[in-house]
Image 1 (cartoon, rainbow, N blue to C red):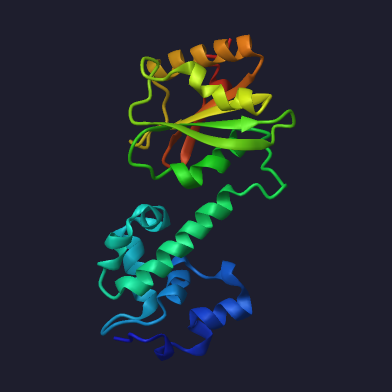
Image 2: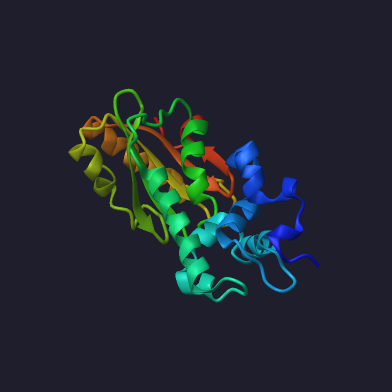
Length: 228
């Protein structure tokens, strides 16, 4: 079994392919291989990258994994673990940067596309608030609750706290169902109704309440649930 990158044909080596075809042409395992650089007996760097993705259930799982968890994987060690975690953190910070070209939301799908990459694989229920300006551009993504999300535990006023400070025009509430089923519950609908009523009083429009289940989503606004 080949276990060195140099055992691959030049046209198949990740660094050479990146230089000729661009980073977007590489698979996740190949991009990791560039960070890992060297393989071990029986596995080249691409194969180690693939094993890491399988072990941690993809890039989101690898990003959430601690340094020690990554370091202890066969063929990784302290230096490679540090490189991988540093790359993950840079990607996370880049994703949250306000570059002056703010993400604009025109539809429930736009909102879902904005949050799903960082929400679809969460192991616990979380509630986030997307804060928008008058042109529906994202001002801030606020992560408020982690754990059970229901009307008895969520303080509705807290959902609007940053929106008020930022003089926002609207918000979109998003929470996930770790089960993968985005079907709204009776509690979800009741919470939505409370949030919409509060927004009306505060003159901050609640554009939608999305439920994310895996890579699927449900818009309560589209279904007319909790919106008068």
